[in-house]
Length: 256
Image (cartoon, rainbow, N blue to C red; front, side, top):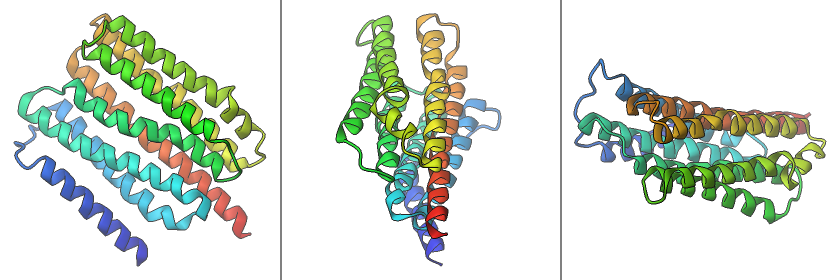
């Protein structure tokens, strides 16, 4: 009963926000593949958000913050995707700034998740938190400045890639990666490894989109929007599900 109440509250709140953001949108055309991709991704984000908030009470206390943040990531993405869908339907465009508003909030939260799942099983230094946060901001701000034309596109790409490489170093060879590998916690090690793969392989889509969409012009805006939409769908939801699975594994182990 409690989970049903949380589901209802989360759904009503998110639909209320999205309704306010899209009060004047026109109907989505049935042959608008880009617009439909915005719509499908937003519904997936809504379902994931409801799931994470409902499951928050099912995991051990130390993991609840991580699962809550996973729900915040998909919830924020849902609201932004509803708004971007409305803008797309009305104008046929998806300005760079709208996508980066979403990323500037959700990506740092995802990076913080590495710290949170480590903190769920053992004491870790706050330096991990700040290094991952700063690395994600450097990556995003560099990319945005380059795509929006505030700095040369190539310079923005280089700065963004530098931030991404710094993040990869931290989670593979830095303090965070070393603590995870030596933790002795099977659920944590599995989740940490899967999250690293998402950040490595899943996130590679974004710099590739930058190269082909802004540096070489090899991909048109419509295709780039669909690619980014699918990448967000997989990277945000899969990231949260990995954390939830680790939380459930640790919770089950403690209850035995």
